[in-house]
Image (cartoon, rainbow, N blue to C red; front, side, top):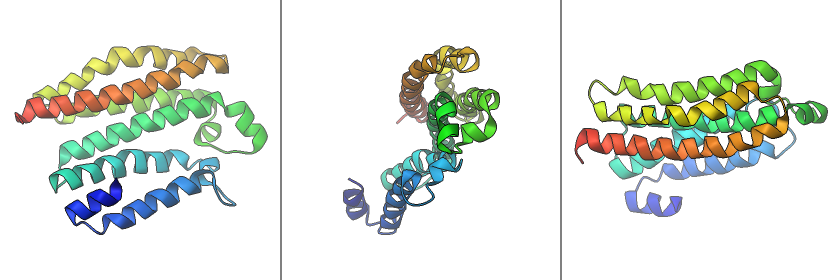
Length: 191
C-alpha cells in the first residue's frame, strides 16, 4: 500500500521512510543487539507508530502537516508506547532473567506503571492545545472514563496476569482516540 501511495502522490522520498520502517521493525528483535531489549523499543514505537505513521499518512493525503496532525501523532505514539509499557511491565520478571533491559526493566516496576498512566493522560489531554481554535477536539476527552480501569489495573494489579486485559483496553483506547480525534477535527473544520 505504501508503494501505491508513493506512486500516486509522486513523493519518492517516502520510499526511504518505508525502508526505515522495515529496518526499524527488524531491528526491534533482530540482529546481535536488538534495540527492543536495550530500553529503546519505546522510542522507536513512538517514532514509527506515532510520528511516522500519522504524519506520513497526513502528508500523503493532505500534502501538508499542521499542528493538529502533530498533536494527533504525538497522542497516537504515546498510546502505542503505553500499550508496549503494559506488556513490558507484565514481563519484567522474565525479561530480567533473560537479560532484556526494556524501558520497564530500567524504570523498575513502580515507575514503569506510573509512566503508563502518564502516557495515557498526556495523549488525551494534548487536545486541549487545539481547543481554542477547534473546540470540537475536546470530544477526545470522552476517553477519560475508558482510561480509568486500565490505569487502575496498572497501578494496583500485583499479579502479572491481571495486566493482560490492559493490553486490549489500551488498544481500544488507541482506536477510540483515532476515531474521536478525526471526528473532532472534522466537526471543528466543517469538512
